Image (tube, rainbow, N blue to C red):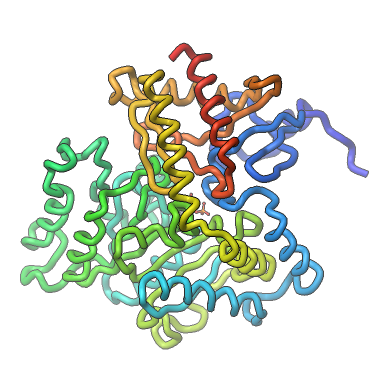
Length: 459
Ligand SMILES: Cc1ncc(COP(=O)(O)O)c(C=O)c1O
């Protein structure tokens, strides 16, 4: 039997034996969790923490979801392990179901290609678009976008910090502004801007001297534009509805593929299977991961249009990973899709999202440091600002986050913690991604706890 270690002993061992490089170390006092269920995490002292971020949206359907866990148990008892090169029923059924869901969403036929984590799916998408657009190895992506931390993925992720210590292994993308209207790059006002961001992007194709097309304007140097339908790590920013259709027309005209990174916003986070469905645009490639298995087992992948990914175009061995399409992951993903079938998330997610936004807007009246709120479905952004309602307040955001993680909030005689995650260009945005199964009472409790945190900090 393993010795029961105390919290302090575990923390002392962590300080000695765990790399600090494989994740962020935001918390002043590291927290050890011991169990989870539904919308709740329980720390080592069994204090419940309401989780409003659900593992960066990897657990859309609640921790320890019994129905999804059951399928996992069955797979454990039958075929828990199998080399990727052999087939198993769940892989084939999952590919079929994901292709069908995507065909229903966009009316396009395609295939599914599996890997393990989000960044690996992005790497595979990079290979796919580079092999499709032979001779074009350059990519475009958004300022404030996030596509992962592997070497290729960091080249298309705008933050220099992610590359700073490691140098370049591929070509850094051309980064263009995302339509973050509350903090418009061009300092325009929504409604009056006439889509300055789209017009600036289109202008790049006007002459070879803007560095994008050849002298006849026929050939473009860029293979693909990697987009997030809503910026996730960038701060749960939703674009205005006309943006993507306008962008897609420009990309099509110049033969640039659109890769839609749905790793965080897909699987009903915004109320649709794929968030891009809100905008009526059909991407060429879609990457997905996280909530595909409800966070139970690493599994990721991509969907691509048939002409890009058929076996002649993207032949066997184009990519490979030992754990790609692993049986536990594919079984959990199939069960996740079955769970989705039994619930009407297309209706409940927008309803719950509206309720949460309304409650946050009420709270804002008492606390002007809530500078803005917004979002789509249950991807909700809360901007913390100075009392002018605009200037980002990173310090206060961090203080609220740290206080929530202390686990010492009291409400109606019980003790709670609050799990929040911070994102945004200025690290002043709470990116709320509660479970899509969250109850009305839990949303009300969140408002109480969040309000209590603001009061405690005197704002
Ligand atoms: C939009 C997006 N793309 C890619 C990734 C990378 O996924 P992973 O962390 O599984 O490598 C993330 C992770 O947060 C993400 O949000």
